[in-house]
Image (cartoon, rainbow, N blue to C red; front, side, top):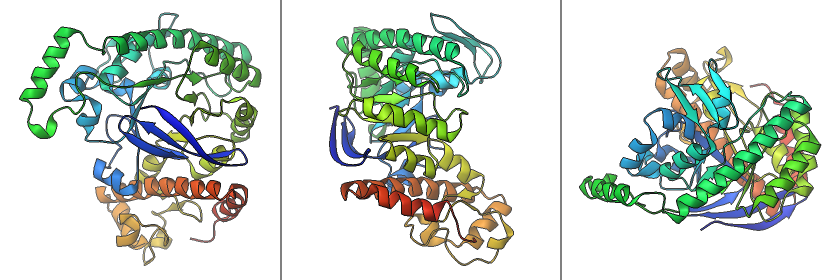
Length: 404
């Protein structure tokens, strides 16, 4: 159920096929972010229409609200959010470490204050693993310690060492859950009873046993030596089905991120899919694929869309600008999304000026579709062994946009 096949390469760029319990996806792959079990403003049908094949959800947010056991009683996360394709859940590490207010980190885990009700909660590597098992995504991420992009070597070293110790605990707990099917006999019986009494459209599709894989997260800040050491020690800890690169795109200059990826690429195991966390602007996806990355996630397409900024082949377009008031053109003449095939720039601008919610949905949908189409274009260029020339041409157009 967890298999990655490398189909083609072009320089360091890779095209592959990742098989997971809920389906097969092609890489390079962009995953829209469904933080609270929903990609904001978009339905599962919108996502399918946009060509999304894998979505990310957030462990921290779903734990705080509605709680993982509510999700479990309603059929686990796939059924809960109406998504029948692969899902990945992050560990909650980034969200916890970025919280404002009370937060205390020690070897056991992190004590923090809920952003919902102010209550004190504790998240440990074991609890993060248990929550993700209960949610039931295809891929679960290990609990990690994130530091800012400009962290000095001692700070980055401390986070790396803690992340590696926590990884061992995550892996141990994940293996225990797999061996026990993740549920006590009593909870299995409760789950079967709940499933049998639920209306058929809401009955769990996978209950009570399941399949899930755990991926480690490589930390080390912007220090190549730490990243290299961390990678070696992760690989020494066991056999993995994928590997995430965390702690980048967190405030460091983009050339620094590129340098980290370039240094890591020849050292990364060729058979494993490589997931760069939290990256989702078009130019960043192209640069990272060029440096051997396979998977991405980011809130950028939906957040920018809700703020009136649209991705296009000629660079970003701010649809609120007055110049679009009487513009009959679509956002992107080459795009096949609902926004571009139905509406003019003038109408889209009207929606934002009038503060109509439809505008938020349409630009979010377009931006997600743009990144999915971009990933498909990159796959095609890699398979032609022409990625370098394609990327140069793409940048020439995107980074030097013509007048909107």
